[in-house]
Structures are given as C-alpha cells and as structure tokens.
Image (cartoon, rainbow, N blue to C red):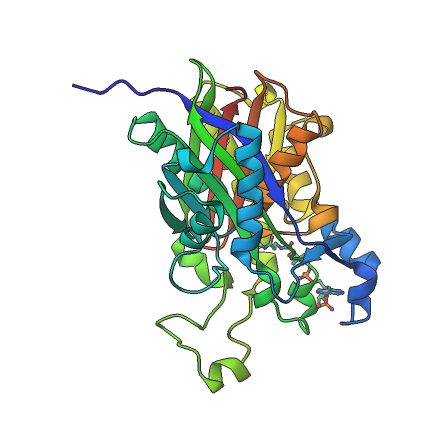
Length: 332
Ligand code: UT7
C-alpha cells in the first residue's frame, strides 16, 4: 500500500555574506579588465570576499542561524542538516558536520551535497522528500561557497565573475496545497569538463606539478556553460511547471541562479515572464555558486517581493554540468 505523503516546504530563510567588498574598479587594478566590460557582459558591479580566517562553514552557520530564527526553530529540533557546496572547509569531515557543531544541532544527521550552483535546489528537493515521507521533521538546507579560495586572481576570464556567500532555508511540514509542488533535476556528466577544478582529488592529488600548473583553480569554458545555461533554464522551468499543472504565466516570482544578467534575461524572454517578476541581485554579489539562489530567495522575501500563496520558481545550473528547478507555493 502507498503511504500517504504530507506536504513540505520552506518555513524560514537566512543568508550571510562577508563584509569585504571587491568592486570592478578594484579588479581593474588587478587584471586587464574594465568596469564597462564586466558590467555589460555580466551585470556584476561588486562581490564579497571572505577574510583570511573565514571558511565556508562560518558563512553557512550564520545563514543557518538566521533561517532558524526566521522559522522559529531551535537548533536541537533539527533532525537533518544538508550543506550544498563545492568548497568544503576540508575534504572531510563534511562541512555539514562542522556546521552542526557550530549551531549546536546535536540531534541532526548531516551530509554534504555537490551539484555546483544547482546544489541548493538539489538539497531542497532531498530535504522536502525526507519531510514528505515522514522520516524527518525539520531539515536545515544550506547552499554555501567560498569560490575566492579556488579562483585564479590572474585569470580575467574567471576572477571577475565569482563571490563568496551562504544562504539557508528550514524545511518542515506545511499546510495542504502549499510547499514544494514539483522539481526537475538533472545532469550531463559528459560536459563536466567545461567547469571543473582539475586537481586536489583522487585523480590528481596535490603535488608541486598540480600547484605550478594552476590545477587547484576554477577552469571554465565560459561560452559553453553560457550556451548550456540559456537552453536549460527555460527547459527545466517548463518541465517543473508541467509536473504541477502550471504554465510560465502562473509564476509570481522567478528566482534564477545569479551568474550573469544576460543568461537571466535570455531565460526570462524564453519563458515570456515580465521583468517585475524576476529577482536580480547579481550586481551586488556576483556568482556565489550554491549560495546564489538561497541568497536571492532570502533577499526577495525580506524585500517584500514574496507573499503567502505566491508561486515561486527557483532555477539553476552549474558544475556537473547540472541543472535544477523547483516550483513552490509559498507559505507555511
Ligand atoms: O554558475 C555557473 C558558472 N559559470 C557561468 O555562469 C559562466 C557562463 N558564461 C558567461 O557568463 C560568459 O561566457 C562570460 C561572462 C564568462 C564571458 O562572456 P562572453 O561574452 O562569452 O565572452 P568571451 O568569453 O567570448 O570573451 C570575449 C572577449 C575575449 O577577447 P577576444 O578573444 O574576443 O579578443 C576575452 O579574452 O572578452 C575577453 N575577456 C575579457 N575582457 C575584459 C574575457 N574576460 C574578460 C575580462 N575583461 N574580464
């Protein structure tokens, strides 16, 4: 007999970004670039960079703490903590274990999830399924990355794009008809080489050669990722919408991965969504990887853009290459 599922959704959100701001003018002094090039090609004006003593878990824990406060959940009530990241503090233990300790979430199981910039939506899907099934009651989902630590600050084709940050959401049971309505997740592993950090794992362990060859930095074929992103953002959003019987015109708030204003604009046009429904903060933070969507969600929430009952679409793409979209009916 099929077990009855209970609806699950987001109870509260939070975010954290480092204090230090790196502007396009600062980058003009570091590499051969210009504010004009960065602004017209990406929409980014500034990004946040961690202090020397900060790591991914520090931002993740702060974002998590804020989400717990917003959701009015005590850390000891959590039974699962998932951290989506490609820049863990260390290879192991998992960053989620470090966050669990920092929050005092002593009753929670933990694991990390790696799906690049799609990571938060992947983790949200897992968290919601866990709560829907009745196996877990309160799950903290965090997207956090400190890409500045794996950025080649002499490579103008990548260093202007990224920033550091973390965003979080508490997932729990919600009223009938609310919460996560549908998702569409996927990957094209064959295109993984377009966005990768080649060394530091079991294939290419750290050595003098890998360090001198710059293999511990982000390597990206930007134009290939761009083409993938423009195509997949529209496709995955339509697939998620179809699964819950909705159409693009039903979306009240569209929260895309904040990688590039031109990608967001192309997706918006393909879906024929009006500009006032699209949340954009890429100018302030650049591409914060797994943190990008939850930071945008939190800012859209706090800015009053999302009301209870709204249909909210979260859509991302990233290393893998992966994609993920989620449709939520907002409210607890
Ligand atoms: O979360 C997923 C992560 N990745 C992404 O989202 C990346 C997706 N891709 C993109 O956003 C875009 O492809 C980029 C912003 C990375 C690049 O924009 P583009 O319009 O695809 O430029 P391009 O790579 O075709 O480069 C055009 C020119 C080149 O010069 P030439 O060969 O035409 O003389 C580059 O060398 O722009 C040059 N260029 C720069 N010039 C000034 C590349 N980076 C810079 C720079 N400043 N920072």
